[in-house]
Length: 301
Image 1 (spheres, rainbow, N blue to C red):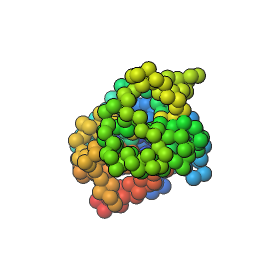
Image 2 (image 1 turned 120 degrees about the vertical axis):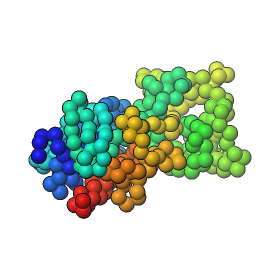
Image 3 (image 1 turned 120 degrees about the horizontal axis):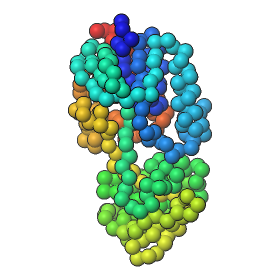
């Protein structure tokens, strides 16, 4: 076997990819883990709800993960981009940082790219005052002024999301930005829970000392706000889009629930790119499951 021939190439080195590499390394499979590109959680300073790692910086989790992978001689980690994937199961042809690589199986753990909303100040505050998940950030900002920005694709989830937010704060406003219509029944449910609804369009987000201070409406009114939650659209990295794997009805890579194989035989997916239920510990668990199924597939081939 030449240097550039592997049983499995894993694309993506976050919790999902690292977990998959660990499981496959312990199964003595020859693995190449390729990790390149910007970190989705680059603005995050701590990771939460990961048992034994609660409060650990994401970069430290990656460092520990890589350090532990070094124990397994069949696992290679490269800070390199996978440029392309071709071929078929058992004989995939890849280009990694300009070099040819072959693999019997592919495991995608690329995560998703969060789109930035075209609201002045949004990009600068993303990940520091604007969040997606209260389970990840709620404890640290409990009992402060929260806003929830409703978007057309998430309006159906606004009631359960807002009601659960009351676990962390009672000072809560839902912003429709003048574009989202909240159904009457949902509006009554929110109002009954003491949750305000602001329908005026947003002009921008005002910051103080690098943190969100208020939401400016087009009327010129500033509404005090310490944290804003929303679920902006997400897109796949170019490599995944170019593969042409089948997506589900909301745009995530469709996988078999057990094997986690995609619509292309021999290509598997784990972590955030295959589900809207996204968290580091879930990605790590998904990576372990996927790796085990890949190993069984290899054993049976």
